[in-house]
Image (cartoon, rainbow, N blue to C red; front, side, top):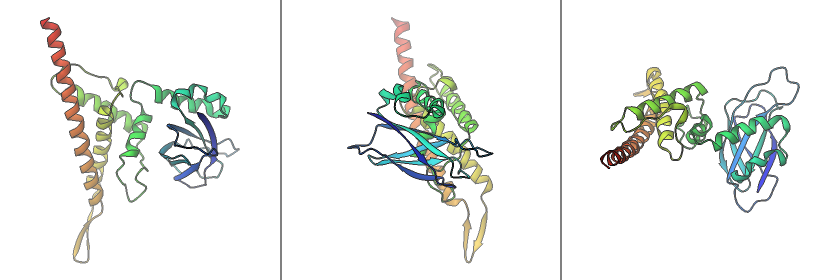
Length: 248
């Protein structure tokens, strides 16, 4: 099954939920969403939207910036990803089709994309300044650099059986998602450590970013340990296979 819909975003809203017009027996496999503004607003923001949860009744979303007017809408495509090639036939507005198609292409790409990373870290977000846990604000440049760092880190691990390129990171498992998330969180951890300020509250010394630093530290340790274990194991297997071929 494949269906689409349009939802008007309340002004200044960063998060919310979108109800499905259809009655479904179970949650759709995937929802892809984009933000559109087809009004005569003098200034129109390019707003990113990420789906953070899907049920049979609708989905929840997070925006990377809040709309300044009530003229922004979420256009979404939901259902079986195998049918997404029929997006033009299920009521997606023509002006939203290129953006929806871009997300379809990212989803179907055999390599890791910015879209994949954003979806992944929404599910493993670290709370920031007591905001919604999925309200992250990493820029495309930060994500691209984290993916480059992930490739360099993998290539530097022994044995040197093979290497990868940042623009062609395999996404058949979570190996490079873990590595990319690690470098994103590591950057956030270092930033919070630089800006951490201690002050006295009565008889107790309080560090503003103490809890946040603790959360980022826990996340980075877990992500890197998981990445390193899988990466080294995979490279050892590849190294053995190469040795067998040389001996044979």
